[in-house]
Image 1 (cartoon, rainbow, N blue to C red):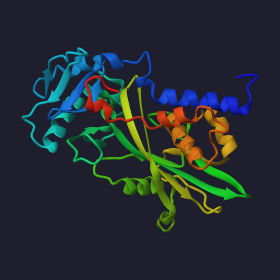
Image 2: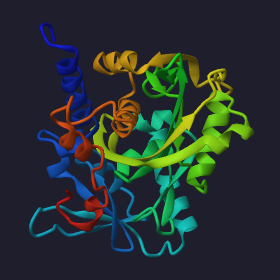
Image 3: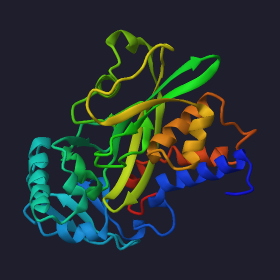
Image 4: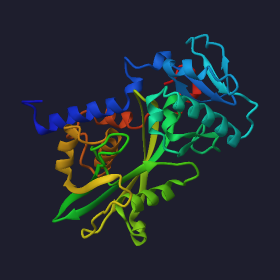
Length: 319
């Protein structure tokens, strides 16, 4: 990016970021070849061809439907003999455990013993729960929380960011929001945010009156682990200037208090975990640091942070 101004570098960096986080809907992805994943005739995910060929070997759990006339896309359904969410959860867990033992998929090497609830929309009752490391194989929506911890110091807006532990299973050593985490089965959104703040930054209970939900962002990417439609509930937390986060669960190597200008540089240099940088970009837009006056692609950036994930359920052709 030699010869470019700071604003031009940031603009290019932000474009690269949103497209990296939405690689599944851009040219060259596996999207045209994917098959649908159904529960009770309701689409809740997408399955890549390399995953499909393994899952169809479990006819006691899954049933295959014929090709869609328009797309030649097939469907994989959980058999209707599994009538409850618990029964479906147990059946899929056995499949994933078998595939894990066979070491078929890279993603299952990161087994968490933690599940995510799978549902058609967030407002609906979960249809089943799937081991966290296996959700990408089914392309089901993952929900999570991200907390922007910020303060004002010497008249300057500053933000606490964490450097991820080098032993983390995903994105080791990269920068992250002050706190973040997936929405495990049974957890409420605010409950999850408080839990992550306590575990990752030792935030005391008396400070959570300053924790404010600001909305959500959504995007969909794919990598060597599978397909990841993700919806992240975002929170802002204005912190006292004297507060210093301390990690309590070993997932953060250390915290740094950075100016927003420094954070922009770190985003350009790809020092951040991609979706965490997306959350900070949303923060910058909401706080007037990125506007139409300094970012010509603002509308596109906002659109790419709010992909309508439910469209992967509503039509056989995806988005």
